[in-house]
Image (tube, rainbow, N blue to C red; front, side, top):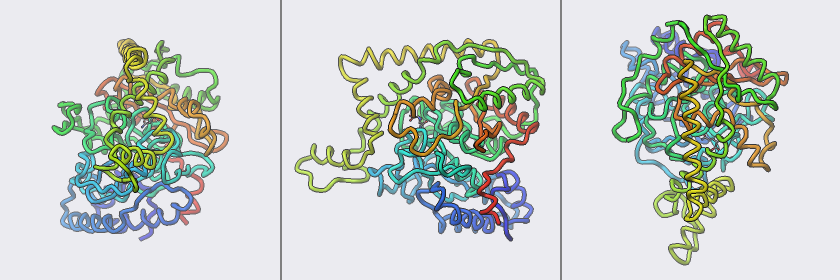
Length: 494
Ligand code: GLN
């Protein structure tokens, strides 16, 4: 059977699999074919586990034939950002320093997908150690936006967003430390959800900035995001920051309707300099929510202007500490010809890390060093408290905030590479959410004059993912943007 994987959602595929209208074997073959056709243009994957995926699909077909699917994910191809440790499958974090690292165990998120029967189809490209906003910092070359391959897909989880947008798999996992799920979701026209800090275990994820990192799904629609979040969420004794609270049945809550929802529109997130089409599409999305019964008021997040500086101090400080473990001795690449132990560390790190990772380690080490600690790191922590307090004040008056995900649509490959600060600025609307630990979701709400997708961001209260998904679902039901597909896929599908 010739199935077009980009026409399926996780939910529709699961339905067809359980009715035996489609087999997991056929589905994985269709995805592998799509990967083969499109990878030369997109470079979404660092590794495709075709053999393993076919074996998992065959096992799923046996369960499905017996009428015993393990879950709605059984037999469904899902891709993983290459920062998720996968037992026996190379995990590089898109870095030379981990080029040959084969983990001995699975991340909890991976184990959860596996135990629910998901077919793990491969590892996706990203910025090295998830540091970046375009996927251009990958040591193995950038990924390309399926809507226009001269554009970046966003980052750092760019490969995951591309793979979902291009129909190479039905869903993918990413991580979001400062927007790395939401930004690429918005640039590639898919749904990206960053759960509350603590909602999903980070055990077995290559750490970037531990007070900010969170795991989440990329999907084609909101229902699929609800299904995947339900599979991923829950307490994990192996991650001390994972919250010991119940996981709601997100999918069944989708239909509850908007109710008397109060939406706050943060004034500071509609700055001058924003692409006019982003501004107008997001305002239209707000009007749709209003027509569905929500009330809308403007709110203020007065410390938003400090978010970039605060984030890039805290994230780099934590990165400098997390990345100290890559010494060329215990993991990955070890440089040849060292004359002493210190020399071995120095050479391995010099050869193993890319320029942006080195920049972050230097910045972070500086911010933490004696004499500067209070002025930089200490001050950033205080600013973080103020950013968080802004949200608390806003949420005293409303249930949800709505804003653009990014000030512009996808920029051109190479455009911001020479200017790290302009690259950092693409995160201006996403990073405060991480500083405050809140859940947020990006979903498609328009297409600009160049044919590129626009994303709207919904921000929720801590552990308020159900309300977030409910509002996003109501919006999606009332609009058609989630059905748009990259034009180049029309060729691939024929
Ligand atoms: N662009 C941000 C950074 O480079 C966010 C990355 C992320 O969320 N992993 O740090």
